[in-house]
Image (cartoon, rainbow over all chains, first blue to last red; front, side):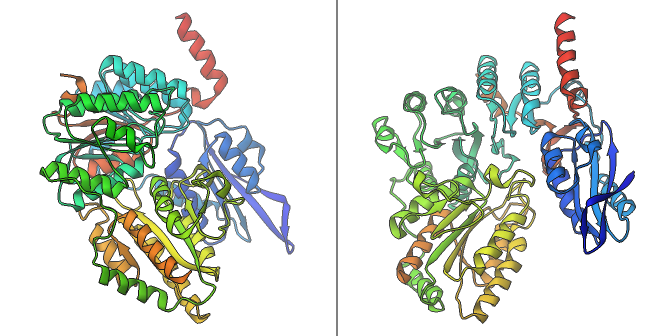
Length: 533
Length: 59
């Protein structure tokens, strides 16, 4: 452990010092370390903390935080460091103690105590293993994923930052070997009722899903569950699978597998609009399965879907409704409304607009799910006009500064722009908390729209993290004579570790309008905004 | 039958490489999982990685 004064940082004559501990060749994953930095920053007397591996990103972060120590700059990505800035009293001994406690927290597990250091030794230890779940930094992925496929393992690749050439090679190899190659950037899958990475606990049933969009797939699987049916398998492909360069390799292999699977009666396909020639190959494969298929191209070509004799899903919720109807052998109808009656909707609109003052007219959507954000904007634009965003529907409505909302704004907080030095907002709600505070200070804001994604992988209590800020903001606004309408939808089931019912109850008790789906939440926001325009 | 269809009929057994929380989540669900204590090759030193790759090719 070494301490040195940071000469250039003096405030009011007080010296700010930096302490640094380096542990060579000790590796921890980035999510663990980012959450740890956050924890240590909360300690008394610690001005700033950075705990991480010696990656280029962390070296740049250190400089930005005023920790321009040459020893950090000389580290390798396999070296671990703890750096803090402090004043008055050196907190480093306490910090190191706390870091070690967090790193070595007594794990209740025993099965995880055996930790082979390579994939080969893991396979030797568990020769009947059949799937590798890989979430390493992008540049190390190719070697490990290829090794896994060579060892005969199916692969789910959560990591992003993998080149499209590498993705193609891995998928071609997997196809040759008849294995799954889900990803890169595959966030969700449910295989044999086991949720992998970010996935919900969904009832088993006869609807099989192949999805190229993570939260889109989660929302459809959850809606199927909410409608009383279940899923056979949920396969992910990663967001680029339907690009021309990849040609839909995993999507097509997934369709074939669900076609062969006797427990799958109905197939659901979800992706952003594919390259046209890829869409044709994919739809042909779906047709060849001879099973009823619902396709959601998230705003893409509906006509082509119908030409192939398939059912187009108009929203994520509508996709689930149609799959459920087909699974029950019922007629397929569009679901473009509400589960509530007209009277109930009117009562909500009246209640929520009552306290809004003239001048309060804008929407702010703070989303952790990218596809959910995109869907909400599509549903809202027709009703309330253009929406500004970091993922706009039209380039002209891209926010100039993503940290500042303008007019109607919906933000995808999972965008790389926001996750450079913090985990995804489904794991770490801190930026959404910060951003919500800012939105609530804006007197032109009327409606706040939010998603809460439950399930494995997600934060243990997403509602509990946001609720105090929502309530405090609402109170302050009331004192200024301003109303605040909160609308939420929860992507989750009562069997998720966070429990849908418990999360929902707390929101409702606090006066939040909780809608059963993302689409209905967006529609409710549209109704309220139209009333005050 | 393809290997994917075969997988659908088997108990799933996972090797996790990367974020440890994914392994913990699986363990909570009583799914058989092994977590690899992975480290960057050659401590992440890019020059060493290249050298090692060259040596492997020659070998």
